[in-house]
Amino acid sequence: MMRQPDLRRSNAYLRGLNAEFLAVWLLRLKGYRVLARRFRGPEGEIDIVAQKGRLIAAVEVKARPSLEKALESVSLRQQRRIARTLLYFQTRCPSLCGLDCRFDLIWVGTWRWPKHILDAWRV
Image (cartoon, rainbow, N blue to C red; front, top):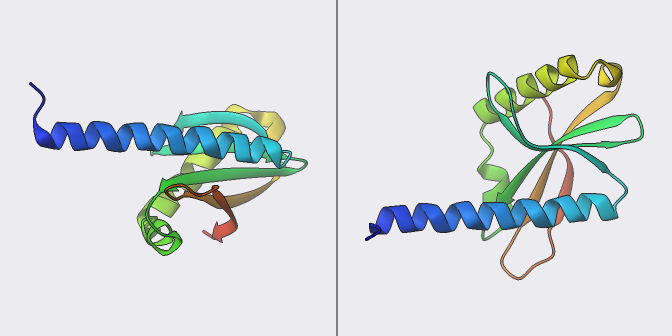
């Protein structure tokens, strides 16, 4: 029998997967090419790495009750880890090294279309 905390963690994981699925489709509809999902580097993970023209976007996806809570949930420490992981991603794909980088956030609220926040933070 599954304990209560494990059930909550499992539900949160499934909500996160669903949010990432919606985020990927939103990006594709906006003309982005998804290069990687859940990319892991030595220092962290990026939910989605996407390209549009000469721009590479590291996209953090947050399923939260409000946009404010989603923005608050990305700490300065996490922002720095994502930035270092994006640099690592670019070193593994040399053709991407000269491109501009941006850090975006996609908020997925309950029964809402995902909201894409361009340039959500700078490192």
